[in-house]
Image 1 (cartoon, rainbow, N blue to C red):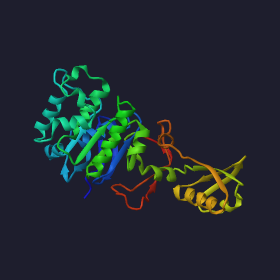
Image 2 (image 1 turned 135 degrees about the vertical axis):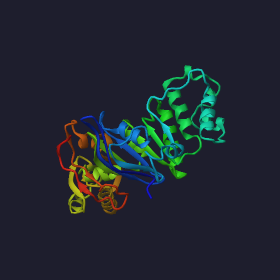
Image 3 (image 1 turned 90 degrees about the vertical axis):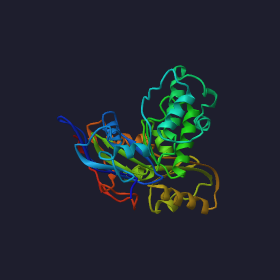
Image 4 (image 1 turned 30 degrees about the vertical axis):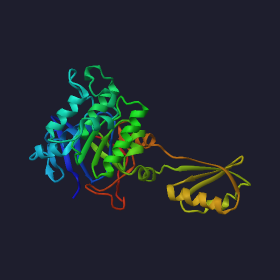
Length: 329
């Protein structure tokens, strides 16, 4: 059973369709990225997932609980880091986490929670004087109280400095390791790329891509460039017949291969090694998640040509139908 199951979700506000037939299936221990441009339906999906809004059609279950009819059970199982969380100015960091522990009936060590999110030195400071980054760290600590089985993070890196982002990444990895499911919605695409197992991209309320980052690269036809400095250079023709190697050129003392997928890149590099030449440098350049995101959602008027897994599909073999370019709703 999937931890989070969204089946044919639709949400209408009058004549506006905010979410259109969205289906997702997310497993235990998975860090799942949820992306889309402004107005794509991300916030509405999260609100529906948490039971804050009622779907027009379709269903959502969390740990087998229907979010509409069993909303209390859902909230008891989910830790939430919302976007733009507002703290109580007069309460200290310790009092905020202690309050969260009371609500969750948890015996967590409050000081240990604050230390984990980097606020050990601010335990008894009032939140009214916190920076945006400190506020985000405290909200993260409150979401972690009680070791919830599901964590919903909406723009979790907002306001965090590089150290805070690194701490967040470590915490997400630790939570996934213990079996928690992390639903990670963010505009920080580099952070999503470094953190998430799979990524869903929505545009105009519809799912337009669903795969791992590497899978998205392959499905979008994005090529990885492998650049090798060697003396003497191997014969380019020895690489041109390799499966997945699309193009091989020579640029001075550098051999440049454009490869479709990681396996093709490895085959090309192994061929260079096996040729017995002396290698001085190896570099690769892959399409970033930002590139794939732009290619998928375009200018907001069209959807891309990245393949989407069938509705409700779990990891499987990653095969799915193709979403073809055309006008979006």
